[in-house]
Figure 1 (tube, rainbow, N blue to C red):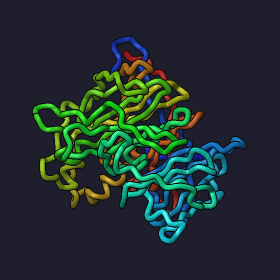
Figure 2 (cartoon, helix red, strand yellow; figure 1 turned 90 degrees about the horizontal axis):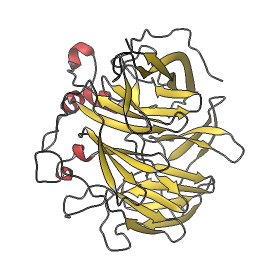
Figure 3 (cartoon, rainbow, N blue to C red; figure 1 turned 90 degrees about the vertical axis):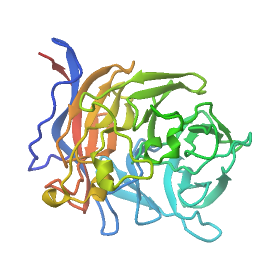
Figure 4 (cartoon, rainbow, N blue to C red; figure 1 turned 30 degrees about the vertical axis):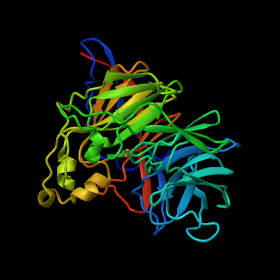
Amino acid sequence: MRKTPTYILPIILSLLGSCGDNQMCYNLINTGDQLQFPLDSRTTNSLLYMNSYKDKNGIEYLTFQNETKNEILFYDINTQKLKFKIEPEIAGDNGVGLFLGYHILNLDSIYLTNYDFQEISLIDQSAKVKDKIEYEYAEDGTPLSLFCFITHTYQPATIIGRKMYMYSGPNRFVEKDPVSVVMDLDKNTIQPLPFTYPEYPGSNDKRKVFGWEDNFSRCFDGRHFIYSFFFEEEVYVANIPHDSIQKVSVKSKYVNNVSYPKEFGSSPKELCEQPRYGNLLYDPYRDVYYRIAYPHVTIDEKKEHVRSMEVLEYGGKKFSIIILDKNLNIIGETLFPNYTYNPKLILILKDGIYICNSNPQNPDFSDDVLSFQKFELKKIQSK
């Protein structure tokens, strides 16, 4: 059941997308409806992994990892009630360590990644460990780097048949390091894909030698993988084997040029203020893509009563969402108000697009609830 709040924060959204005169363009329109998932005192609404999962009985769940505990929570999306948890052990014969991120193939096959070592654990619903896969090297000897399945930076695993398409973190010490790898789920073997971390403009060094600007998001539309590097205007479109890569310009009208972080690190405030891009998501129900863009902002922590680290954690001060059609043409862009939503947590469902509004600067914020505002994709006549 969708809930309509008694008080709706006034919101002014951009109604002028990247459309020409007298053309139809698309925007995300606030419906006033919300999903609200109650949290207990030990569960935070700052999440690094969140996704929906539909079981064999057709029940659709919101699943997310509680950052303060080694557990996965399953909420019935229809009732917004907690149904059950899966709590892997940390140590012992059945231990998985401190996991970060997961992929649910089904409730008997849940893959966990770890932020301490290069190992994937396979568990079932009872949290029994069924297998462990180390990935320090690919099958052909290519060195791989630590990665985690997270959606805060949108990098979920993708399953095609019995293949799992995953990632490899940037490695500054090798000449060519793969962005993505593929694991055979029957043999547990991993092969690198022929797409390496790209260079950034104006430098002969690979972007990975710095730090933040190797961050990227990836989505899959059933035919292509699309990569959005956070400090590049263009996105990379790869076929499934990644042996054909095309670049497509996806420029926000609110971002003139991206601003690269300093070589030896930037402060949280500087990272908050830098113009850049963010997550890229595919909407299978409407056959469109959404690319997050972060315009340049200035933050006065004292005057605005904010902490830059928390602003980063909850998705920045200001953002827009670029709307792309199935051919990656820009068909609209919606600008959102300051300090209201968390664009790192977007739930795409059949009935709408739900953007998390559990932002500490939002007047309706409660740390006892994980809340999402429902938006609809609408055609708007451009004048």
